[in-house]
Length: 408
Image (cartoon, rainbow, N blue to C red):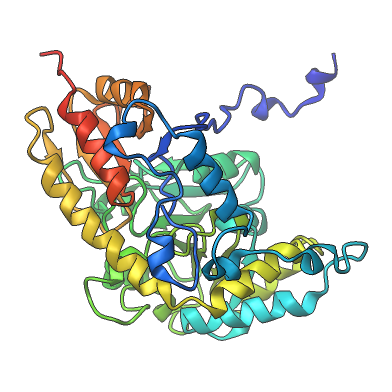
């Protein structure tokens, strides 16, 4: 059989499975609840509106059509940054993408992240950045990565695709902070990549810059420190107005073994465009660029992203609203007797502990609300991760939870 020709170590690998979401409130994938537009008053309306009257019914056909109209650029003038004209769609589609718009996007992102363009590589989502980093540094069957469970599942996924070993250094049970002593004990000479996530997915806690700098210094010439900052925009809001106060990008000029991952999927509400960045010292970025295939970005994707970023004054308000809704939701969740703990969060999601995790997740799904339960993972079996939605989505969530009957 042809299947016998598959690499043995990839046979039976677990597929990253997403739940069908048609007609459901999506509080499980940490997406933005809003479509980016010029007028924040417009995109305050949820992409999927679920009111109290709709609870248990999913999304009405009228609401779904409204969503499709916005996504198709057929609603108000304010949705122009995300709309696509016929001229834009048809222009030069017979040609491979021009690289100049991609360079313009990299320049725009470099300005947003306060780095130089030579320090940034555009990728198809942060996931592709992870993939490229592992391809560049890991020799199959020889090298290792270190991750800190509970961690983003794709670190181990891409490492195994590269035939690399995965060293697990669990976070501390008490507060999910790094166990630096255990890290030192578990590190091995062929551990090329130390994968950090700040704020961490799924726990939501931040790693301070002093710790990151210390690791860069300690493992200089021995390992690359990779910091996944997919959610960092939601952390810095409480510290100052600076967009880079808590980002490890501020350290790239000090250490030559640091790479930072950023994305437009979360705070910028552009998950559908699949755009991310790897940021780091110019020699490492150039090495990554050398293994990047040509023409990987659709012309339409680049044009849409540029249009949104040119009209991105709404991002600060969007982040402020998510942070405000996050605090409100945390307070409300703590009132339920079956919730044992609501953990502090610096992301756009909330992580909580309850022995009722499986039952709660099932109950919410019956009410057309999706949250993340890591069924089968012993580290997370009693945990739930809930994305912070817009106010209507959060109200629908709380309404459903108030009718939940715990089985104790």
